Image: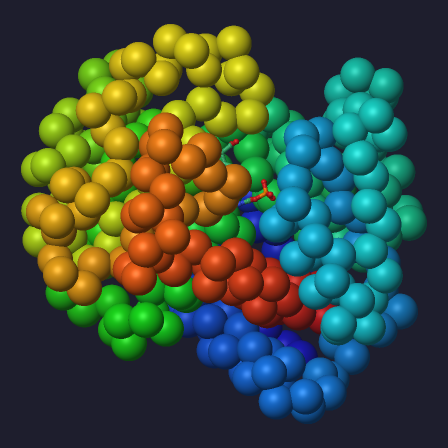
Length: 299
Ligand code: CP
Ligand code: NVA
């Protein structure tokens, strides 16, 4: 397969053009259909090994990449936090150059976004960001794919993000800006994401969800912020996605969460389990979209 994406990194959503995102979505839809109808995939990753480097816990990212690589005929090499120890046991640059001699691609979940960039700079194989403190591009790509499946078009949509201005929020903002979807972000004062283009940032969740087609939330304390969790619980209490807030959005608004969720903190159990929730479709689409990303970058 020849694509302009071959050999490239995916450290940030800003590494992709809208045309390239559409190319990924087209292939993701094809791979999803093949899987659902029991049709064999072309073994795009046959003979290829991919390192999955985790410096933080994971369910969705770890399992969807591992299974996705297997389904494409490749071999995943999963490395958990006590194994590689990026920048601790050896420098990020040395890890990048060593892994490049063994594997055909690297997926990394780490703390500092700088580590992802450093890895990408020194690796001679594609590096994919599986979550950093600044971004979660694979999540955002799967989420917009889910929105497209449910709403059929991006035209005229408004996405509301309520909660912490974190990594997931910022990747969603970059993607909304890239695709041209209206987005409003509501966070408590002091927890706003970096300003970006036409994205509205407010401190009132009711303002953000007004006329929204999607309400998205994520945990208030991300991995690595465990010490701030108690303080954030107090500061974020008015930013809970509950039935009352949901009633202010459009009647058919989708409820989204990247998971894992802290029920009755950032989202109530009834809303997470409610009819408008698509959280497990989001989780499933991680598999299909990441498979498309792997094929485009590595094969
Ligand atoms: N949403 C997500 O990335 O989940 P994990 O942390 O379980 O991988
Ligand atoms: N913002 C969360 C997302 C987890 C998938 C975190 O970084 O922990």
